[in-house]
Image (cartoon, rainbow, N blue to C red):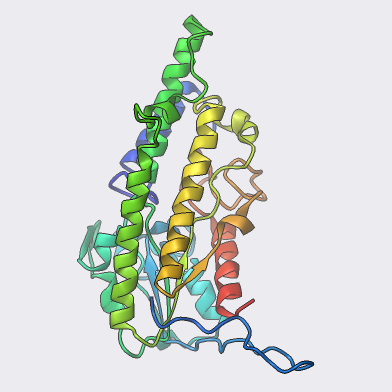
Length: 328
C-alpha cells in the first residue's frame, strides 16, 4: 500500500482520502503443511509439525513491509521496509541467523511486482519471487490489497460521504445511508466489487503456484489483512466526523472480510496456510483508542502511516504468524 492508489499507501488515493476528510473538518504454495497434530495412540501426546528453521523469505506489500514503523530496515528507500515489521519479529522469535532471513517486501506492491521489478523512490525493488530457491524452507506472503484497489474504494466512499453530508444539510430526507455501497451496486442488485475480488484471488493463486515451483520444499503462509474498521460502525462517528456514513463503514468492513475470505480460499486450494490476522485485531481497529489500536486512523499519531498497522499492529500480526507456524 503506497504510491499508486492501492491498499498500503499514503500517497495517491490515500492522500485523496485524507484531503476529503480534512475538507469535512473531521479528525484524525509450497508443499502442503503437515496437519496440526498427527494421529496418535490413545493416551499419547499429539505431535506438532516441525517449526521451519528457514531459510525464510518474506514477500508482500506495505502491510508486510511495515510502512513508517521504526526503526527503518534495509532495501530500496521507497519500499519503506521496517526492521520491526512482522517478518523481522517472526525471524527473531524463530532465532534465525541473518543469512537465513530475507525480507523483500515493498510498499505499493501488487501481485505483478512479485514477478517483475518494482520502481519506487530511490531505485528498483527486484522481483520479489526471485528471492526464493529450492533451499527456502519458510515463506510468508502478504499481498492482494493493492490489486483490489482497496484504498481507492475508501477514497471513493469518503467522497460519497462528503456529498451525502452536503445533501443532508439541504435535503435531510434525500441523503442516502450508504451512498458508496449504492454506487458499487449494479442495476441487477449485484456488487460490482465481486469481480474485482475474484480477480485478486486468481492473481494470488498464480503467485502461490509460482512459489510452489520455485520453493517446492517450503512451508507457505498467506497472511490476511487486519481489521481496519470495527464491527459497530457507530464507534467511528466521532473519529471520522461523518466523512463516511455508517452504512458505508459497514460496507467497507464487509469488503475487507470478503477479501480475506478470498485469500483464505485460495491458500487452502494451493495447499498453503492462511494466517488470520483479522480476528485477533478485532477491537484494535483504527477507531480504537491510541493505546489499543493496531491500525492508524486517517489522521495518525505523529510519524505514523494513516490506515496502516503501527508497531503494535506489526507485533499482533507477528503473533498470528507464529501461532500458525508453530501449529498453535
